[in-house]
Image (cartoon, rainbow, N blue to C red; front, top):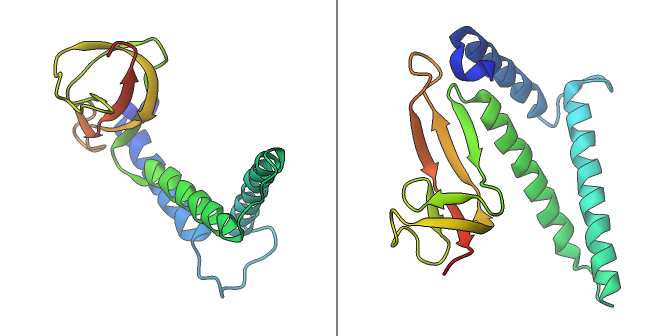
Length: 163
């Protein structure tokens, strides 16, 4: 990917996302046209909320249950948080990367990967991934002079095939 190795492209990406987030997170009282980026973003958030809410209604209906009223507020908060996290991936001057091994992939327990039950207790042991319980987060470089060093911010937690 060009943003991992090209300083100018990386700066362009960061500046573009900074501008976009300032528009999307505008003051709710400001008057912008119907075709603004902020209104499109708000519309997208509402559409995702409706889709997820409909899925939960179907699931609870299939089990003869009912959806609690506060669930829609929790869905709304989760979607807005997801949007903010997505913007942070674009704004951050370094390249942020999610760490998600595939089912059946072999990983070494340590800084990057941990057993969801035992943490890094078995550091150095190789496990086969059965399930990713928490994706990891890594920062590649600083986006300015260092474009290659890797820092694991949050280790990926897995449920291993071998226990």
